[in-house]
Length: 319
Image 1 (cartoon, rainbow, N blue to C red):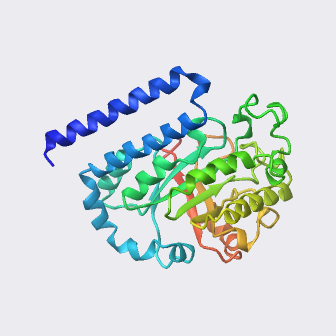
Image 2: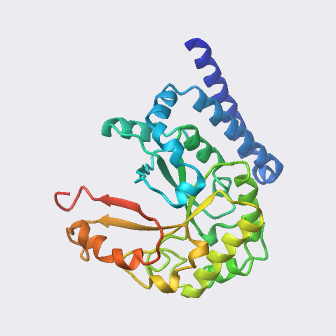
Image 3: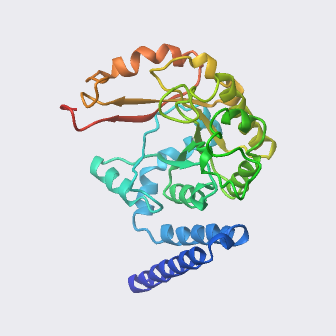
């Protein structure tokens, strides 16, 4: 395939994508349903073409050749190797920024992490295009899945409580099946992806300040019930390629109260973040102080442990 031909195919795919976006934007609410599905599938096809044309792909596969024998579901649930990964908020679908980071570090990440939210928007469905792009790079996708319940369209779903009150006890509503319409659509898209994917749902659920699914709006038993309902929903639908990552906030404890149970959790994931002196409540702490002293409380669940968020600020001192 000549370079000119490849460039021509890529430009044509981009033009088709732009025209589709413009068309669906102009027709507004009519883009829901079948046309929305068409857009998701077309975006997936464009991503497939883009990944096929990537010069880095074959070289990256060679770097991850060792990972092939460790990337099946059984090995991922009982790993014998340390798996490194990265998240970059500049990445969308091509992950060129991740590849650039890998080149700067002279390494290749077996896992690529990104975030998605619950809601009615097209971008809040199962991120099929993104997970396929990660898989096409030879890595395992990991999704942090955030249950922002206020993002659902009240007009499209009049059965939902008003936005002003929706977060209060929202996890109990999930457990009672109120949001099964969303899980169904997520599940149907997920079925098109036949490979393992890590899902980190409702992270830091024990933090009373940051997220609406925290203890300021829900009881620990509400979180456990919601988690179990979601996992059971997918299992009953025949979905068996999800690796469920339970991820409490390491500093707020109450791990036992929020733990959904061994059959519902595959990994334990925690954030290990150093904010330096940028805030009144923070300081420069060692890895032992931020993570190590909490390790026994996490290790007792006898699950693989992941540093699902890891970083140190560049401001407020010398990281």
